[in-house]
Length: 438
Image (cartoon, rainbow, N blue to C red; front, top):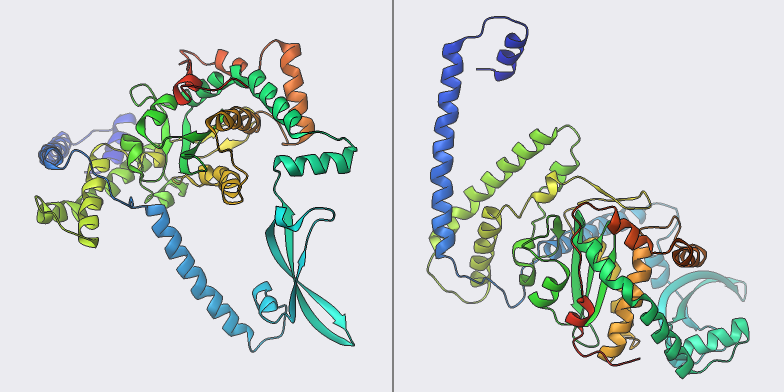
């Protein structure tokens, strides 16, 4: 029976075949009974799975897709380079670098070379002795350690300042902004979409929590559930968390496999939801037989990782934590820009890159005190991105100065506009139990 035609006939006052309608209801009832049986079977299998499923190196769908993309990109580059051999045209940078006659380093004027890091290599054509040659210039840049800040302020402003003075000013700034950190955590807890990622740091780990209302970066904290609990409480958080498959996220994990469905504009909200259920059913059809085959067994190496993976997928699917991003609408930042539920945590990964570079170039804090200070300052400055149009020194300064005239910050005003707002209190004391006085 075509239910749409039946509804249209009913709305137009035409007769409806009651017998066909009852047959349709009976078929639906049969499908629901089968679904109930299937759900009960899956729940029994979930109860038999290990309580904690964690790999030594957690399986990452995003990493696997990245490897596949890199392999596909490499194949395309080879095909492209092969086709260029018989054509005239502009050479790629890679081809120019291979054909370079020599390499020359380029350093900022007036700065010691051991304080500079390689930024990029630029091939440039030069005419030398009536012959065109390519020179590969290795461009070095400065990372802003305290020593380099001193040199820059002296060069640009003719201002001589010592390390102790810079350290004191940073401590004062952190103390001034410390009161806003709980507001940032509160905004994170009341957000609709949260991108999360973490990486190792000079001490312990650095985390990024990116939402449409705030951007919180935690430096020098442990990579464990206690740290996550301090920012988002699973019992009360009602938004969508987009992360990789690190075990610490537990019930927050989601699986990137329905991105095309989310981007397909032909679906209505109801149709997209139904299509998501179909994808989930196909996933069950694939992994349930495998779970049965390997149930109760313990292996070594790749086979054990495979067994743990299918168990993890089944758990996430039953918890409805794989495809939730498909039906989640885009969140809007206070400045009017959008933060989509993209199905990947790339936004959080990009936010962590400066911290990773600082770690790799020995410019990261080595003490809990320094990590705490960096957490406050960086989180505040990054969160202002969500509230200003054009992230510049002028826009940041104007926003900070407006807090004094308006009596409160943009973060506090946003929290006041949220109905039934969840407030976070004492987060810094939880993350850094014994901060040293600045």
